[in-house]
Amino acid sequence: MSKTKGPKSYIFQTEIVTGVCPECTANTLLVGLKNSFYKCSICGETLEQRVNGVIKYIQADKDTRIALRHDEDGP
Image (tube, rainbow, N blue to C red; front, side, top):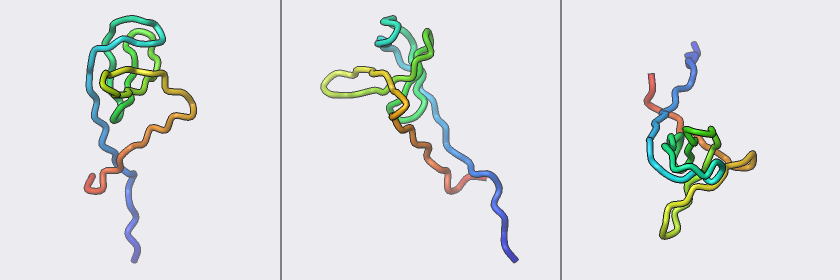
């Protein structure tokens, strides 16, 4: 007898930070989606956070991979 698994569950945590969006150049709230990826609350641009002595946000494009962490112990 095989056991069918339901839909996979993912952990999705958000974070709100302030920063300057390089696309619209506004000092704005950025909504953290996953690890170092953020969305500008003004123009909606997806940004990648880079830390090299100072935090900067750069535009994330079609080649940028955003990985989701699978919740192994989920419902």
